[in-house]
Image (cartoon, helix red, strand yellow):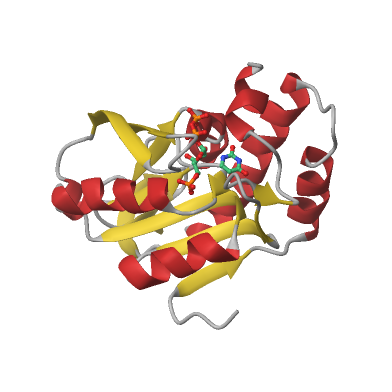
Length: 212
Ligand code: PRP
Ligand code: URA
C-alpha cells in the first residue's frame, strides 16, 4: 500500500506479542483492558519521538545543571468515546500532565456514518499537539469527523494512535487529511461487509467495557 502521508506501523516485538494476545476469542474484559493500555503506552513512546525540547537551567543536587524540557504548551490527548477511553490510561502513564479533550462519536451500524454527541476540548488548541486515541480505524469516518472538530478549534498538529487500522480507512484519511500522522500497532487485511476489520479485534468498545 503506497501512501504519501506519515503512517507508522509500530512493529515492536512487545506490541506484536501483546496485540496477538488481544486477538484471542474469549479474552476477558480485564485482560483486554490491560493490554489496550499497555499497547497505547508503547505507541505513545513512538509517536512522541519527534517532540522538540528546549534547554533549561535548574538547581540540581550539586548546583546548577542544564536539562531538557518538552517545548511548548502541554499536549492534549483526545480519546474518542467510548472505546478510546481504554487507551487513555496508557497514554497518561507516559504523559501524566497532558490535558484531555474528550469527543464522543458513535458509528451508525447501518450507514457506518459517525454521529457526534459530545465535544469538550481544552483551551489554546492552536498551540498544542493533539494525540487522538481510538483502538480501531475502520472506514475512518470517526477519525475524519474528529480531525475536523480539532481543526475547527484551531489545532494544527494532529497525530492518531490506533491498535488496528484497515487499509480502506488509511486511504480515506490520506484523501481527506494527509497532514496528520497515524501510529498503529497493526495494519490489517480489510473490512468485512459490516465495516469490521479483519482479522481485527472484534468490537473493541464492547471488549473494553464488558458489554454484550
Ligand atoms: C468504533 C471505534 C471507532 C469507530 C471506527 O467505535 O472505537 O471509534 O468504531 O469505525 P470507523 O473508522 O468506521 O468510523 P463505535 O462507533 O463502535 O463506538 P464505541 O466506541 O462507543 O463502541
Ligand atoms: N469498530 C470496532 O470496534 N471494531 C471494528 O472492527 C470496526 C469498528
